Length: 244
Ligand code: SAM
Image 1 (cartoon, rainbow, N blue to C red):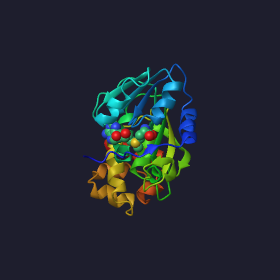
Image 2: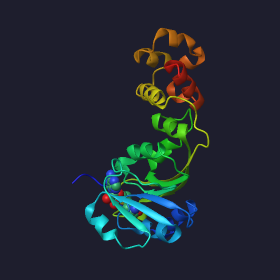
Image 3: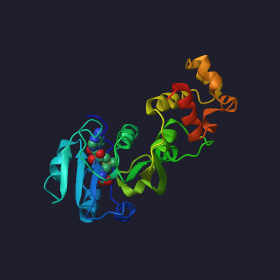
Image 4: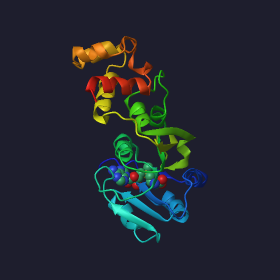
């Protein structure tokens, strides 16, 4: 069977704090990815109106069905399944799908997300420009949302104990979307950060950016390395290159 990242969160204090961070109320429809044995689902169920729980493991999904009156279990892979409407997302994520599910969730409307990730992944999500952790993930998250680490969670909070540490991240979508062609932005960050030691000038040449577009780019930006670019710099570069 495919790896499912089945490390269940058993520390009651951490479970309760996740509920607190999400400021839940009866009004909330909460999406939970990977409810597993239902430890977090129980907290979400007592504090919110409805929980929509997507679980890929059929045995776990069956054992959750009917256990809580306001929890709807959706069987399937959270990357592919049709997602219902919700306003908050609260999950202890299966780490092997961190990147894909984060990008999928960021494309859809939501008010607030409180998500557990592998610690290193969380640090890359919230990294500042100019630091070694800043990369394609950082910029793509920053384009759409404000991300902050709320706490680091030790391995002992889970059963079975995972090999990696974890961290809880809160995402709040940007009130106003930054006007840029998102595909051009993503292609640019992918290109720049696959050659992260090279100067922007060199990477853009290798990405075959046409010379007329190169001439329109601020020469200061061309001399930098990708990690030294701010979000605004990358947005401006993407706009100049794509002409949109
Ligand atoms: N929420 C539970 C907890 O905190 O104890 C379980 C979290 S466990 C880290 C991840 C859960 O996600 C497992 O129950 C696993 O079966 C499920 N899962 C793994 N891949 C999935 C996918 N692609 N779609 C939906 N659920 C998935």
